[in-house]
Figure 1 (tube, helix red, strand yellow):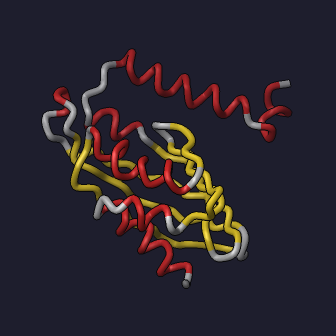
Figure 2 (figure 1 turned 120 degrees about the vertical axis):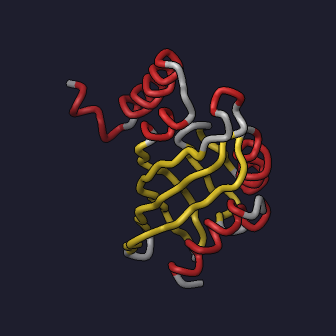
Length: 155
């Protein structure tokens, strides 16, 4: 499967609430690190993430990948992403953000997915209270500080 085809299948599976098809893009032991929900390991958990976690408080997903770059083992792609929130306080608003997907590839499948996302516009769209935003951003900061490549920055 070409990079473009894989990325389109990735986005289509989320938009179509097809966790099984999404999970098939990953290796058996693949891990998806979601910016909101954390890590999901293995195809079963990854499929559940799409079918349950994503659609628990949202609908009408739209996901597009742009400008992919790969060396065969690592794939980067800028993305635009949105969904219609079903959270009561959001009033049906469409939450939008952009980011960069970082995928580790093995044997033509995704072994690991991470993302760096600018979620701030979505928090405003969703009418999140400042305390809720602070909690989410604090968690993201703690995860960043725990990464090995940040050790030098913390010294």
